[in-house]
Image (tube, rainbow, N blue to C red; front, side):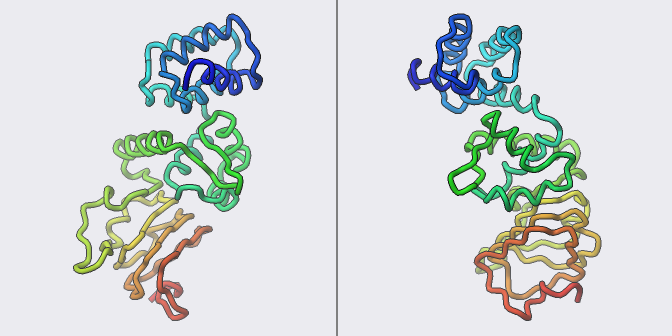
Length: 260
């Protein structure tokens, strides 16, 4: 964006109005130039400033000037302003399917010590997520990548705390079933991850005894699942969202039974 457009956008998010304020505009222009007028960063930094008192603006400006156009450092400054619960919601959204309905997604967060709507509203106010015309959650691609990067780092340090599996191809090196797009997984692949709440099993075939494997699973996306269901004791008592899109399941599909 050019300087005039970026300054107008910055004022909108930092001041909630487009009025010139000499001292503020001087800080704003320095920040805008430092991030090359990238709209996402203009919005995020402006929203971050709106939560600060005037005395903090200069300190934040120095941080941004040092960061330059390094997107990760700037987004991290905003991420650190979140509460633990708000941060968890942000990371969940980074893994959820794009443009998912906000009302559906909110079922994921009813057990947090924060109202789901309040958490999403806080993220929206900080320009970290947007709500579309059809109530869909919209997250910028760079923010989604930033969130998933945080998840990978945290889970790399503490593998047993993993709560989300966004991409099974990256999670395990597994071979596809010959002549198909299906991936093979055994219950043992998941036993070391009892905290999983969100799981994508698209085009996957699972086998083994799943007793006590998914005690906290709340969202299971299993698009294109196989007709034959070889897993046993596949109990998901806390599940609130099940997505079996593009799957040829029938009334006698084995997955409907509690155990085999």
